[in-house]
Image (tube, rainbow, N blue to C red; front, side, top):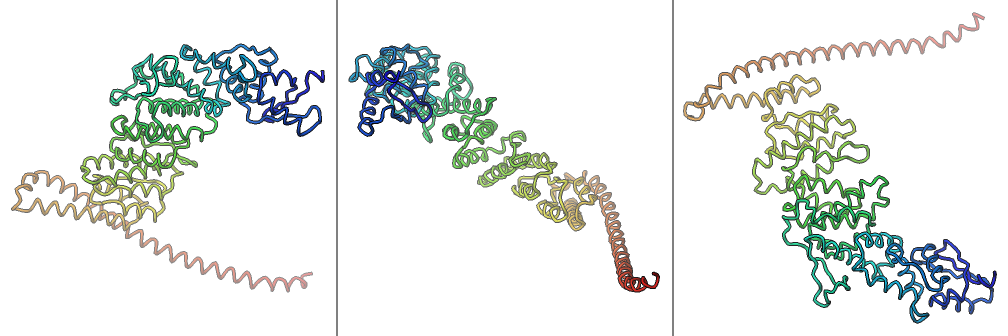
Length: 526
C-alpha cells in the first residue's frame, strides 16, 4: 500500500491527497518537476508537496486525479470543462508529456463552443466563478462570453461585426465585437427582442458581468450603449432584491459605476426624472464612487422641477426616516442652475420643496437644523406662499425659521394663524401683522389713486377686501390687548416668585439656627 501511495500533495492548504508518483508524473509536467526538486532537497520518504492557487481547489485536483488514474479518460461536459481546462494548463498536462493529454482533450471539446446551447454556455460560465481570475488569464472566459454574445446577436436585433484583422467564421467567435445601435431613443422603452437575455444573465457573478461589459465595448466612462446600461441596472436591481442578499457590496461597485456612466452619457434623452431617482435607489448602496454619485445628483438636480414628492422621499440613514441631505444637495444644484431659468420652473420647484417640508415635519428624529436648511435652500422667488410649520421647535428655532419667511407672501389666513399661535414669539407675530398692514395700505393707495386706469378696473373688489382687513385689524387689536394683559400677569407672577423665594430663605435660616439649640437641650431632657 505504501508503494502505491508514495506521494502526498497538499492542495491550497485545504486537503492532502495520497497518490502514486508514477501515475501522476505520466500526465503532469509540473508535478513531475516538483517531485524531482523535492527529492533533491530531502531524502525523506513521504514528504509533502504543496500546491497553492490551484484552480477549483481540492475539487479540481480530484477531477484531475481521476483522469490520471483512469488512464487519461474522463467524461467532458459544459459543467466541468472550464475547471478541467484551467487545471490542465496549471499542471502542464500537454502533449509533450504524453499523447492525447487532458489539455488537448479540453481544447478539442471547446472547438465546438459555437454550437453549444444557450444554457450550456451559461452553465460553463457560472462554473468558472471560483477560479475566474485563472479562467480570464487563460483566455477561456473571453471565448465563453464571445460565444454568449453571438447567441444574443443571433436572436435579437443587436448586431456584432467582425474585426478587420480576423475572419468571420463561426469557428472563431472571439473575433466578433459588439456594435451598439446609434438609435438610442428607440432603446429607451423595454423591448422583448432586445432584453430577453436580461434575466438569464442575472445568475452570473459580478466579475463575469464586468468582463461582459468590457467585451461589449462599453467599459467605464466610455459606456454609451443604452442597452448595456439597461441590462446592468436590471442586473443590479435583481442582485439587491435577491432573498439571500448580495454578500459583499463592494463587488458590485464597478458595475454600479459602469451603469451610472451609461446613464450620464445618455442623460435626459434616455431617462426621465423619476427614472433617474430609480437609478439612484438601485445603486446607492452598492459601493458607487463619489464622483459618479455627484454626477448623477447633478443630472437629477437640473430636472428637480419634474420630480414628484414620492421621488424625494428617499429612505434615510442612522435612524432618520428620510434622506434630507440628499434633497439639500439636489436643491443646491437646482438653484445654482438658475441662469435664465423661467420663474414658473423655479416656483414649481418651490412648491415641491414645500410639500416635502410638510411631509418631513412630523419626523421627531429630524434635526431642526436640517428642517431650517430646507426652508432656507430656496430663494424668495421660488415661493408664492410661505405657510409652513414644524411642531417641535423651541422659541429660538421658531424665531430663526420665521426669519426665513417673506411675511408679505403669507396669506391672510396664514397671518391670522401666526398671530394666534402661542408658540410663535410675539415680536414675530407683530412683525407679520405690520407687513400685512403695509401691504394692505399699499393696495388702498393704488385703489384711491385717480390717475391710475388699472386701479379703477379692480376697485369693485376693494370694498370686500377692505371689510376683511377691517375685521382682521380688530382681531389684531384684541391680540395686542391680550399680549399686554399677559405681560402684566407675568410681572405679577415674578413679584410673587420673589416674595416666595424670600420667605423660603428665611425658613431655611431659622432651621439652621434652631438645630444647635436642640442639640444642647438634649442632655437636660435625658
